[in-house]
Amino acid sequence: MVRAKRSLSQNFLIDHNIRRKIVAVLGAGPDDTVLEVGPGHGELTDLLAGSVARLVLVEKDDRLAADLARRFEDRSDVRVVHGDALEVDLEGLLGSAAGLLISNVPYGITSPLIFRFLEMEPMPRRMILLVQREVAERIAASEGSKVYGALSIGVQARATVRIAFRVGRRAFRPVPDVDSAAIAIEPRPDAVGRERQEDLRVLTRVAFSRRRKQLGRILRSAPEYDLAADAIDSILEAEGVDPRARPETLTPDQFVDLASRLAGAS
Image (cartoon, rainbow, N blue to C red; front, side, top):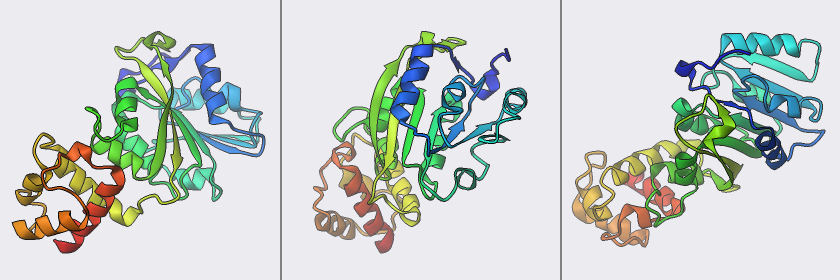
């Protein structure tokens, strides 16, 4: 068995019961195309191959990609792609239909990889991602929560999120220093479009860099918005947002609308 590479944040899922639970939550059927990112030794792959119409594996590790290619070389329904998921054409691999995506996400690239998935067009109709438990809780957090922030809003503006179940650290080898959780992500029909995502990122970065301050004060002093104080107050009033509100009290939809209006006025 190929040993884990620390440089790639590899922790292989060895618990058979957890593997089965993850695949069950994905809910893939015989007509589905499934994209698996970071298949490792094929811990989840072995449960999917043969039960879905098409399975595409994207593996960055040279050794693991070669092993998987050899293992499935005689299977026309399984394709192994050796490449970095942050760089390869995921949409092209999944196809035009909204398929499914599953991944034991490397801890070191969790946020950029999740946002890469969320930017797919079309977005997979369901994603089951195994991530660090703390990250899962931040992604799924509701407004008012202590862990609610830019990551929560960035994901929830594009999709609905729920924590499917939690996974103890001893389900992996090597054993990580943290527990994990499986999260289920499904696209929102009213998801914020690509053209507005950068505006949203700017606002959440500004707002949560000083989350304990009042939003009106944060925006008035933010160099990202070249607006007079009364213009800021007018925009907040138009959006029904109290200038004295803290950033963590606004919903993702409020952030989306406010980001668009601020960008248009700046």
